[in-house]
Amino acid sequence: MEKGPEGRGPDLEALARRIKGWARELGFQRVGIAGVDLEEPYGRRLRQWLAEGRHGEMAWMARHGSRRWRPAELVPGTVRVISVAMDYWPAAAREPWSVLRDPALGYVSRYALGRDYHKVLRGRLRRLAARIQEAVGPFGHRVFVDSGPVLEKPLAEQAGLGWIGKHTNLIHRRAGSWCFLGELLVDLPLPVDRPATGHCGSCTACIAACPTGAIVAPYQLDARLCISYLTIEHPGPIPEPLRPHLGNRIYGCDDCQLVCPWNKFARPTPVADFLPRHGLDAPHLAELLDWDEATFLRRTEGMALRRLGHERWLRNVAVALGNAPPSPRAREALGRRLTHPSALVREHVHWALARQADRLSGAARSSGNAPGSAAAR
Image (cartoon, rainbow, N blue to C red):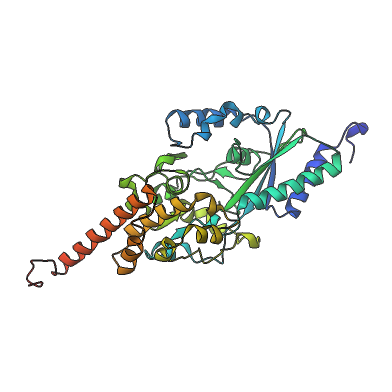
């Protein structure tokens, strides 16, 4: 390892440059170094968000207290965070709007179409830590990939990887927002990078596009209204008033990113693991509802989708079929789930069948073929 001035200790600036080079060699498109002082404004904003109950049933968001915005309390000895970003835009997938506009299909958030990103990034961050250890010897560190009480987006913003946009996702001027984030907490006093500055300007496209109005104000998200929360994190019944707004979104929602002007700069992912598997970029809803648990586990093996579980999968697909135009195929698929052992699944199936019936009778009335009409006599 290179020595610093007058041979005292390692040359930390040179080490930081080498770390960034190793990170890019490992497939990270962007890498930066942040300090650990997140109290203002991030810690304050998180405390307010939690106090307002906007985290819904994600009790784990409040469980770790100040450790979430004080990395040195989470991992004692931490003085810097190496923040990395890996692009995941799957250009080979079916064009998103074409799926969202076809109610017979199910929409899966683009980040979840391939291999579980936790595994991909975690493995590469561990290899990065190993490279650093080869250079400096044993050092204190810990890897995080959306797997612990770490404020990933604030750390990435502080490390210069982009700014947190009005939709609360991280945006980079030359790469957009389709990226995964990971962190390596270290006890090395590396030089920190300049924080990113915001460039959303007067644009409110993401706020206008949110199907459920979950972006309640610029930079403020109410998870209780967010389709990603409702379809992935929320364990119970999806509130009935919100179900029609889900459309055919069965796992997550990308609308706020799809309309973001900065995503015109998004680059296709170079990582084959993030490309679509099993045709889930444009699957037929009726077929998905017929998946038994064994099929669900087999088709989602190694994917983030699996953490949803079969019960919530059927719940989400049932809602999407309830939002679809009436069809014999949809009703038959729903009918086969009326006796499912889960009360959660049965309730959503009954709701979907009632929606199908209401739409069918409405179509009959509008065509003059309702019972008792002149055309029906």
